[in-house]
Length: 241
Picture (tube, rainbow, N blue to C red):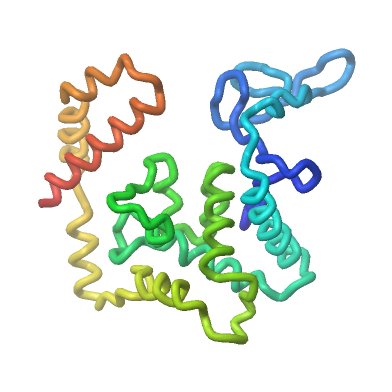
């Protein structure tokens, strides 16, 4: 459930979670070829046994080694070799907890980046507030999370000693731990977030008619998704104001 595997323990290289041909999220099917079943991309049919992803851009060896070490520690905790599993789950949940507000789209991890105006990418926002965030993330974001885990919490997650100052700061900023809503205020908050189907339809039509979205039709897929995310944020912000 922690889905910590993001680096090959044999080769020290980043695992592939997208097809190297059609670039969609990897979905494996089996095709009968030469009398045996072979793994293939279920979208474009590319055979996945040819190690086609190994010619990519090399990654920072030091960072890969650090992330691999954390990955191995988590794997050991899952296998019962070390009693750290609960601590790992707690620390990972803190890193991806909503920042300051329960409905925030930014995780506490944003503070680790220490970049003014950093926004959580649209394709990983669904991991914000998730109980097991690594299972929700693409491979590259799993590596980033493992590096942040190492930087923030260090090697000792048993809880015997004092929590590192930065880790304690992040715990205080995690909305799920900082904010305790009363039953009445919680109900008001839920009511505020609710919208009718007609309202959502109106907002969708507004986005589709926006000149920026119409112009984005000529852009590559990733840039088009970023435009869509900005437009969604804008209409929801106006709608809740």
